[in-house]
Length: 276
Image 1 (cartoon, rainbow, N blue to C red):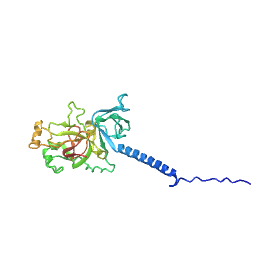
Image 2 (spheres, rainbow, N blue to C red; image 1 turned 90 degrees about the horizontal axis):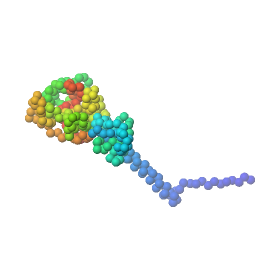
Image 3 (cartoon, helix red, strand yellow; image 1 turned 30 degrees about the vertical axis):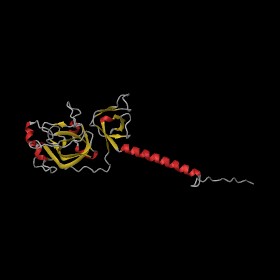
Image 4 (cartoon, helix red, strand yellow; image 1 turned 180 degrees about the horizontal axis):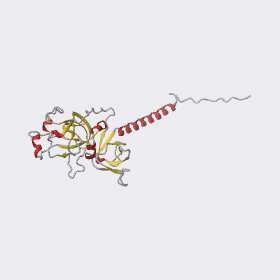
């Protein structure tokens, strides 16, 4: 007679079993740890770092090894891989896919734009119309103070563009504390590293001579030293506060193409600039 082996099934512990509470607590701890890690990773990936001064991209958070390469203020925003610096260095990824560390004092960390950011408005096709004192612009009469307005081709009378301010004087013999060039006609010559949805506003002139940035000009912001530009700023002076280099801003003004120089695109005149 064949004997039958009776196999007892081991049921999972229930609420009355002392093992139940231990198992649940362990599972909860794992879930909490996972969620914390996810939140930390999301926080880091939701931030970018903009180069505000020349800085080396290094293979580790020290000066022990040779740098990978030099990053300049025209570098596209870096993606933060860790929210907190290590020994003063941020762990980043470049737009070219390079991984490394940058010295924290030479970059500006800011929250990334939501992925649902509004697209840039369509710019009318065609060469634009020559500027004049009668251009409405953003409705603030600033075109009456534009020096030789006909040199600018108006592509869009009023537009708001977002991006990060970068130092337009970094490669100049004379560095300006506000990060913009002080022109003889009294205007600023600043650089805006535009957000991705405004990339179409950058032309060949911006890339070859302006570090890939959109130029912005606030008229009559400085003392006018250029004699033929003085009438445009007579009895008018601008007092706009320019945020520090590395600030994410929204700049509103007229979108134009400068017919002089390398025919780059500009926001000129600027009606307002706000930290964003």
